[in-house]
Image (cartoon, rainbow, N blue to C red; front, side, top):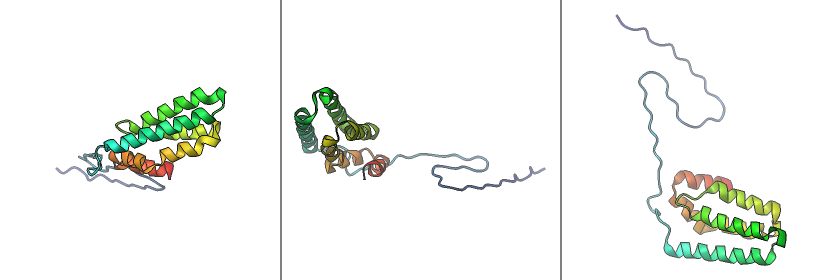
Length: 140
């Protein structure tokens, strides 16, 4: 005796992304692709990034009002840590950029120039295709 064929009907609409499995005995796999050409940042790139961070700290120390100076300098330290993490923390980078736009707009351009610097792009690319795509989406 044969089992009856299932009657499957599917209707998918709108903007969807992700995996979908329909029917019996399915399996799904996920592969995270990493940029194999640039897996580790060059020491010179990290040195340049640290110099940019030091320059930004100096700008903040000179230009920020006294009541916001300590918070702003903490954000610069957070920004450097977020950028140089094994997988750059794009959420923190975005938050810090927005913090400066809201609290110290005269310094937001200097912060943004660090966030979108080509060296930061290289570090994000090294984290993989998905991170690079998200970076492009957030900061382009």
